[in-house]
Image 1 (cartoon, rainbow, N blue to C red):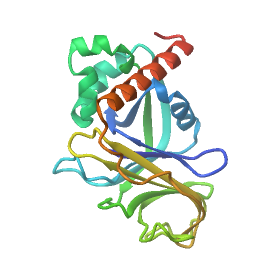
Image 2 (image 1 turned 45 degrees about the horizontal axis):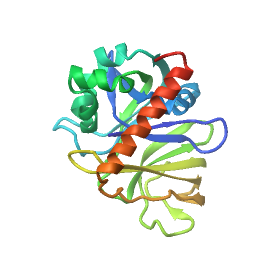
Image 3 (image 1 turned 90 degrees about the horizontal axis):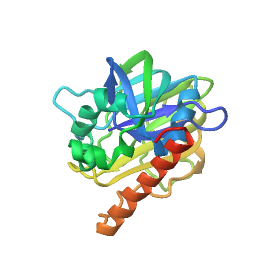
Length: 245
């Protein structure tokens, strides 16, 4: 799993958890159409960063890194680009996708899952990053006229202001802390949490905390059905609004 961050017109950077893919050798994210607003906002930003910080579900050659550049959005309304170029990667990296698209029959039944908002990062800079090894480790994004991104540690989430270890020296401004908790190896449960405020001198003040940082509970059968049905409705609605489907 990875984190995607981007500068916003005013306020802290945007941040979401994503499945990292490659398209033509470039870092890529493929969001379902339910997230059209997020995809368009990220693509409108002048700077974005894709962060590989979580060693779970990775191979022996994995290393943490931060790729920074600008995003290009391809609105794949029929799903051809995703199916032909990215689906195999997603099925390997994101187990929940297998229940929706791991066979021709499943892809026909869940046709709405294949159209994607494909965000391709044109990396201007790729540098080594830091690992996230426990819940105290998160990714920090600070906007001081540029986007500063790196892995940091919050030793005490109850403190105010929040202490932030290993933050960028000299940077200050609106900031976001993003972390992820997931169930391994199925990724059926995936909690992405963001905490925002203003970063300076190793502290985050004016904290707006995440609703929860805990991994979501194991869903029952009906909860799974409601979640999938909600995603389906949102995807179909936005696809139709954009003239697809």
